[in-house]
Image (cartoon, rainbow, N blue to C red; front, side, top):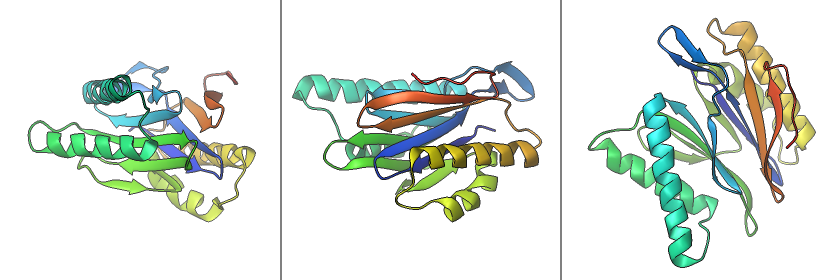
Length: 201
């Protein structure tokens, strides 16, 4: 029931996630941040079982940091995507992680990039994408509205329209959402929706 969406622009990536944590029909909390920083210019949007989500993201983040410390260089978003995909594939044959991911990042050499992965270790580089029941209602909307020169304001409007569509059409729609953007200036929260506050950090 997680909701994750991402949009790649010419010089930024915008990612949106719901903030609900639930177990079966029980709501545990409404302020869970599923957009997890990997380093200052990359983040995971992770959907799935809470334990797998936390364990897998912490494992990848620790390995990315270890590589940076050992080699005095930071992995690119492309490299992190393939490291993540490799670990998902390896785990699939032992003890699978039941989590689907969006990886968003900005690199000085190549600019913004957005990757989609599922628990079966499928990897795709995308312009717009998402995961969860809510994404099924929004993917076609994003396909229609996206263009290569989209601005941050237009991407935020797309995110808000997508959330409105989910709230209108999905019975189990989450009540609150968070939107973050990554660009040459780093990562920041630009809006929270449904929580009664809007922030620019």
